[in-house]
Length: 350
Image (cartoon, rainbow, N blue to C red; front, side, top):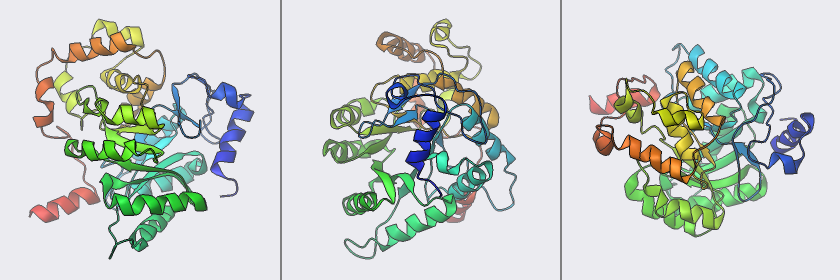
């Protein structure tokens, strides 16, 4: 890269006449990039507690959705990224474990001329050959650099707490060396919430990524309070519960009160509920469908529900059959993702 990412972000604010103080305000104007430029508009933003850096509150996940077999059609992925970017999105979340997702992000972003302007959240899953062996982590990071076409990665997270006590110190060293900017940990499975909360409570993490939705609210017990107390930014995975929330509301109209918070569809209803929690920095829904991306990015605009409205939203969902049994439903109902991950799963079960 010819210019550090942070420097480019400062230049963006100068370009549209925003001081650092103004940019820190909720709803501040963010530029839409050099190539896919659009007029700056009010969007919902959040600060990273440790640095004050501003991020749009809706990001883009890539699990399954960006994982494609070689030669498979992929113009839809480019359109998803374009809609996301033009709508004000900047935060991309991916992982070496997500099949070809890193390649999809790096390839399309480079072609669009937005690569060094993205805020990339990536992961490390590494055990090593022996205690304190960081060779696997280093190889994984170098591979991610090549796939994403990025020298520096904004956030690197310990994927699912794998070898977390050994890898977090490695990531901290990388941060000191300027290879990454923030250190984090992730998990999405409920049995690991206690361990995740414990790592956040230590107070030495920049980011934590956790499963949180209008239906699965257990992160509110310990993880989110700990994050607010320790100044840890929170990324949210699975806000749609692997598409199961859409299944139970299929064919149902939005409640009339949804218009009070600017919701035009169920995706915005679910996403605005998540990002209205003051502990949340950014939610990262994943999709490979451009129409769905257009709905998702709309949650960046308009009013957010207050505490009373959030409770009203939950109460409404509790009247919908299946809401209380959502975790028992099959994941991704009616959807098929035929990528490297799916091929690997099929090979193990045949």
